[in-house]
Structures are given as structure tokens and as C-alpha cells.
Picture 1 (cartoon, helix red, strand yellow):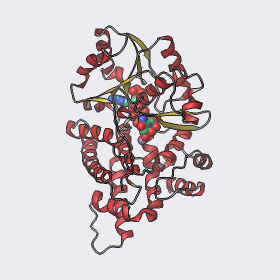
Picture 2 (tube, rainbow, N blue to C red):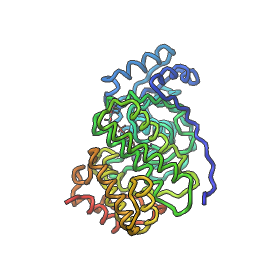
Picture 3 (tube, rainbow, N blue to C red):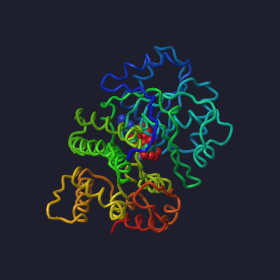
Picture 4 (cartoon, rainbow, N blue to C red):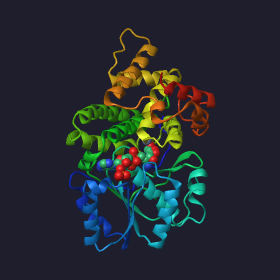
Length: 390
Ligand code: NZQ
Ligand code: ZN
């Protein structure tokens, strides 16, 4: 049964090959000083930087640059960004990049005028925002996180060995996001497929929870089928616009908060994956792929009917003459085969995890209670050991 909920999503999306044409009109809603946030330089190589700067200049904006946002943005970087935003009296933060750049922009947005240490207040203590928020706009260049249309912001603190995501309210969602699928064509293959699995994981972690009849589950089965279909095409031909544009749109749907409304959700793969990330700084999507199959095999007995439904509706497993366990297990086998085929990392050793790290990774995994089993520390250790591979 659907639970009670309220829903609004204030992010205005511009989608398609000409989406950047709308940036100029959007900029008229904000003051003169724009903090231009970007990563390690991919946007300079592929020309997106020049296009954005030329629009900012034609709109007479003062550009304050904040480059060098690393994948898995850090608390140290956040403190620097806040200082720059404060000194520049920034009216708008324009994030041009992937999830890391968008997440970081949101973190700077809520932290610049925070009177306490923002890491403590917003990430360790997960408090609500009660200070001035600087509006954020995004030009997305990497597909996966859904950060373009949600309030999520994940920050890593290497000193404390913690990677924590705060899901902020809709006052922190980007005011607008520009989604041009051709911008993703220059992504290195490793990042591209990591993003594909990030999308899959977002959908699965909302799907594998609850035993009720819920519209969202039907929507998610459709999203998964479209994702599997399009990613197979994109792996063969990364510049296939039809496939890449569908994937971009699925990524937004997967985590723009809509499908989670009125239903319970799991999120343990993300919690363990984030802890792996805190120890290794590995690519987000690969931390998820490396633990997913061991995780799902571990919890399958506790949510058997949903795993059976997943096998039949998403992976086209024929149920004839098989037990529920066989059907559900075959679904996971097909999922694993697909994951290997598209080239995902399937064990955490390959991401730099050592035996000595396992206890700390388990302790650093936040335990959520919405899935089919509330995991104990020992359960997490079992899953992690299984994820180390042979
Ligand atoms: O830094 P540059 O030079 O731009 O290179 C980036 C980076 O090295 C590169 N890249 C991005 N667009 C490119 C490109 N290279 C060539 N051409 C392009 N068009 O790709 C690399 C990875 O970028 P990053 O932004 O780190 O990837 P992603 O979008 O996967 O973001 C990962 C971060 O998002 C968080 C993750 O934890 C991680 O910190 N997440 C945010 C969520 C949210 N806001 O709701 C949810 C997710 O579950 C996730 O946790
Ligand atoms: Zn994710």
C-alpha cells in the first residue's frame, strides 16, 4: 500500500542537443557574480568550458572560477570553495561537470553561510539547513548520479575515513539543469560504464524493498529494461545518440525522488559502497558493482518473492517447472553475466581493498533498515569477504 507523501521537484530541465541555448535566459534570474565550478579539466578539452564562458560573458556576468573538483569531492575542497564563494559574494553557483561537481556545488551552496563547521553540521549530524542558501544551476557532463535533479550531496573526509551523503530538501535542488547527451560522448569508457551501473543500483535499491503492490515497482521494471537495452548498445557504440540520450533520461528518473515516493527503500549497497570509497577513493559506480552480486545473493532468501518477480519481469527468466529459489537465482545469474559483459569491476580487491581494511569498511557502513534484512556488522563482513573474489 502506498504510504503518505508530499512531492515536488523544483528543478527545471533542458534536455537535448541544443539545451545550452537556454542558459542565457536562466542567468537573467540571478545577480552578477557567478561561481563557475568544474573538475579536473575535461570541460576544457572537449570545448564545453569555452561555450559556457562565452554565454556567461555575453550576459555580463562576473566569473569567479572554482576548478579542480575531484571525483568524490573532499571536505578540504569544500572549505576552500566556501571561502571563495563568500569573498566573491556569489549570486549563483554554476556546476559544469559530473555528479562530483554538482554535489560539491550543492555543498558549497548550503555551507558558505553556515556558522559552524559544515562537515559536522550537515554531514556528521545531518541537520537541516537554517542559513542562507546560494542557488545552484548545472550543466551535466557525466551520467549516473541523478545529482542534476535531486538534493543529494556526497562529501568524503579522508582524515576520518568517512564518505557521507546528505539528501537535502528541495530548496537545495538545482534551480535548473542542462542535459545534452552529446556532452557525455567524451567520457572514458571506465567512467561511462561505472555511471551505467550507478543508475542500475539506484533503481534496484529502491525496488528491492517492501512486499506491497506499488506503482513505482512497475515503473522501475520499465526503467531497468530500457537501461539494459540501451547500455548494451552504448557499450558497442558510445556515440549512439538514441542510446546515450535514453540512458541520460533514465539516470535522472532513477534518482529524482519520484519512484521512492510512498514506498520503502533499501540503500545498503550504497552505504557499503560509500565506505569502500572512503578507504580507496575508487570510482563510485564500481564500488557498487563490486559488492552488488554478493549483497543480493545474501539477501535474496529474505525477499524471495521480489527477486523472483525481478527475474521474470526484468531478465525474462521462464518460471516453468522451477522452484522460486531457482527462478530468483537465475535472475541474479543473468544480471551478473550482463555486468561482466559490459565490463564492470566485480570485486573490491581490484579497487584497492585489502583484508586489513575490511573491519573498518564494515564499521563505516551506515546501517539502513528499509531492505529485506537489517544487516549486522557480521553480515556486512560476510558480504565484503565474498566481494573480495577468489
Ligand atoms: O574532473 P574532470 O576532468 O571533469 O573529469 C571527470 C572525472 O574524472 C570525468 N568526466 C566527467 N564528464 C566528462 C568527463 N571526462 C570526459 N568527458 C566528460 N564529458 O569523469 C570523472 C568522474 O566524474 P564524477 O563527477 O566524479 O562522476 P559521477 O558523476 O559518477 O559522480 C560521482 C560522485 O557523486 C556521488 C558519488 O558518491 C561521487 O562522490 N553521488 C551523488 C549522488 C547524488 N547527488 O544523489 C548519488 C550517487 O549515488 C552518488 O553517491
Ligand atoms: Zn550512486
